[in-house]
Amino acid sequence: MINFNGTLLPQDNTELTQNRGLLYGDAVFETLKISNGKILFLEDHYFRLMAAMRVIRMDIPMNFTMEFLEEQVLSVVKEQNILASARARITVYRNDGGFYLPTTNTISYLIHAAPLENATYVFQNSVYEVDLFKDFYIAKQLLSSIKTTNRLVNITGSIFASENGLDNCLLLNDTKNVVEALQGNLFMLVGSKLTTPPLTEGCLNGIMRKQIFQLAKKIDGLEVVEEVISPFDLQKADELFLTNVIQGIRPITQYRKKKFTTQISEQLNGKLNELIANV
Image 1 (cartoon, rainbow, N blue to C red):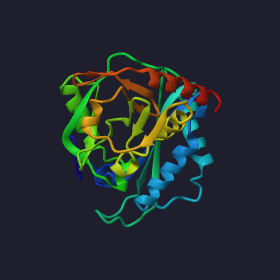
Image 2 (cartoon, rainbow, N blue to C red; image 1 turned 90 degrees about the vertical axis):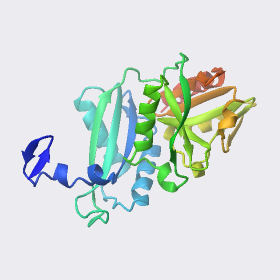
Image 3 (tube, rainbow, N blue to C red; image 1 turned 180 degrees about the horizontal axis):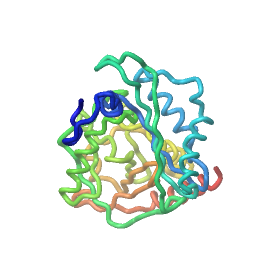
Image 4 (cartoon, helix red, strand yellow; image 1 turned 180 degrees about the vertical axis):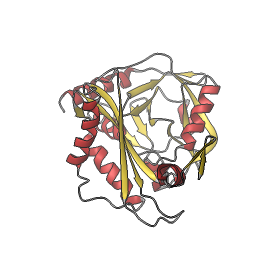
């Protein structure tokens, strides 16, 4: 028998006793935005998921094609009648067996979805204040660049932000450089130079990060680079903004006593909506 919140249940309830995603964080995931019946940036999501599965030595089933996963996701969204605008998540976890050493590398997957208010990316320039989260650090390693279900730094950072009246926090790596935000990649504008940390610093290989990097390169007079960002650099910035596939671009308006403009982030948001309109 097992005790689940005070209720005795049969030992053969494997979803509780043997789910490796629950027990060991042995799982990876993708969060997707569906707009007007289409999964945005599907190919990028698919290849990032496949790369993550390979990194942690999961077997990839023969039927796990991009078309198959698209069909599986849209079937959930369609069943809920939220094809116009939705957020979906695919979680892939290693099947039961073993302790730290698994007895199989085969996988199972879970897909769920919820409605979103907007099919496009709505630009928000309301007050959005951040600070550094320094209780825990991100390791400069390959595992940090993929989306595993071990998000304790993000969870404790989110609690810290809530307790301190912040909208978000910026995360540091183990060499004390700025890596990303709690739920998105970071871009910093100084003059005509737009910078985002390289993946070697431990930041997530973000899908929206890639799109914004490419769109920014098309703006005349704007230099776009991957470079290390130190906490001291933040005080010199003209703009700071975050990117993720659900929100798109979220400008930061204040870091400590420093306030920022939002012109480039607003321009990029317009270009982003033009891009998805042509998908």
